[in-house]
Length: 235
Image (cartoon, rainbow, N blue to C red; front, side, top):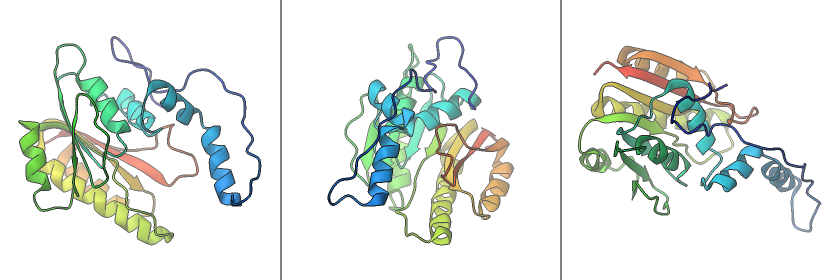
């Protein structure tokens, strides 16, 4: 669980208040699985808190909790958010690097459209496009302090295929991070449990002083997702 923040940093990592349980009634045309999904959404405290605070997704709390624990988003920092849609992580990055007079830079990229986010520039572009890395580097106006990747491929229904696809995205994000991070910088990426994440962890340990494999509290218990956090980039 994330440690509480201190000083002027916004606490922001946990929902506040309690809500009554919402029960979803059956309806014509609604499948059992869709009914379960809807009931889970309506009773998810992070979904409710995200709406309250204006975050575009509950995933914002995953980044808040990771940052409260590892403190990689700092005022004035340069941040790249890979797989930015719908924008929750980008919003958190803007909040935390643009505090005070720091004037940080936040650049996002996603193949899906993202509504404008004040304080950030988001490219509607495939990260795998040949010119994507150079565009991101130019917009950064200098070495990155943090590279974030919450990228995920569309699920196929086959766990092994889905695992390999998301690990491929994480490895591509790591390759990009090695090109743009300043010494001492940080890298955060979503992975899935399944065995091959060990290969990525071994690669990260060569590039970063500390590497952690963590599951933030906001990540659903029944989800196989975890996050790798590398800090102290060796350059």
